[in-house]
Amino acid sequence: MKTQQSIPTTKVERSAKFVKTGFQIGGNYIKHYSKKLFNPDMDRDQLNEDNATDIYKSLSELKGSALKIAQMLSMDKNILPKSYVDKFTQSQYNAPPLSGPLIMRTFTKNFGKTPEQIFDTFNLNSSNAASIGQVHQATLNGKKLAVKIQYLGVGDSISSDLKLVKPFAFRLLGMSERELNIYIKEVEERLLEETDYELEVRRSIQFSEDCKNLDHVVFPKYYPELSGKRIITMDWLDGLHLKEFLKTNPSQELRNKIGQALWDFYNFQQHELRAVHADPHPGNFMITPDEDLGVIDFGCIKELPNDFYYPFFSLISTDVINDKTKTIDAFRKLDMIHTDDTEEQVEFYYKAYKEMISLFAKPYISKVFDFSKTEFFEQLYLYGEKISKMPEFKQARGVKHFIYVNRTNFGLYQILHELKAMVNTDTYEPTLNR
Image (cartoon, rainbow, N blue to C red; front, side, top):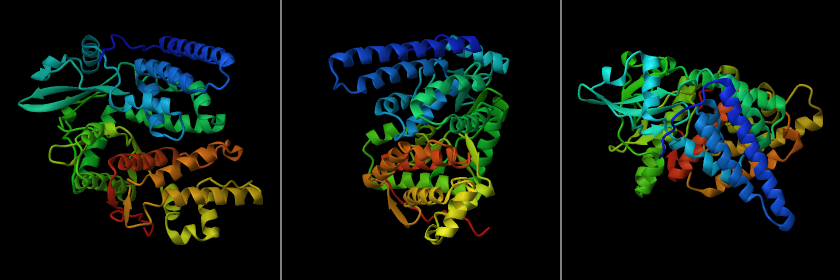
């Protein structure tokens, strides 16, 4: 893949990039409607393809929070047209890497030394490039290491980038401004944490320790003494990403084993730690040669406060979801039903959200769930498409915690679906009696 020789770091440079992309998109619309004059039956597929290509190219060159949002949107397959999902999915695995000289400059600026002054060997060609940083292989004292280097200026440009992303988000998502502002604020908080590599090292060590007894889940060792604000050094984990793993045609038994490890990893965190790895895209996991699940990134962690956890997970309990009064009470606590709603609105949202929760809870209310079944996912996508067209859902509903908790759980469901895994779902259940 062609390397990127420079990265826009100032607000002016990054703003100019967005403006240029906006003009390109405008040109795409002009071309589309000009052709439509001669062919009224022409659909929007080519327009979406052209826009997705231009937007992804721009975001991948900007890196940082702009590209991270593309990565997040690629996982919400019922929100965007397929061409956007296909293009943005590239950011999950391999965005265009920065060139060797640029990485050397970034490394020296953040660490005060060149890689050769610290490691025995350091490969200037990255093995993986994503939204916040890219990974290089190094060795020290005979040990193979992964060195993650954050892109220059990423941490300083989050707030301004998100303001620039808003017009694209308005057009793509169709959210109200209040709803979008809530979304952007929550994303900003998580991204600020995600660019704090010292925080990530501490969390990685803590979560690795907390989850060490889970079956078939492994973690690299982290080295604080070889890490800093913009650099993380950890053991190199050999293995395959999900896409590569599936190309090996693994047995159903192995698919189930990896799927069970994923399910246990996420639900142990949600229900025992009340904090969860909230970035469940396939690029953050490896399947090792020992057929274990390797977790290689703890940059994005979402804590689950009690005032969210209890009402949300109580809805999965059948005695609550079947009791209308208790269900409405939980919806009120979660700001899904507002205090000033009319009786008709309360009834509408009660029925709509009950259907949504009942769909979400299906894996939880059976002891074993087969994620290979397409019917479950078709129901989820059809429901998402249905409510996206309802004017009642154009206003903001639900507490901000839904943004990352929904992303986490539906992201988990999607990976399990790609694995076609059958898992035991009663291993770590909601702890509502505490």
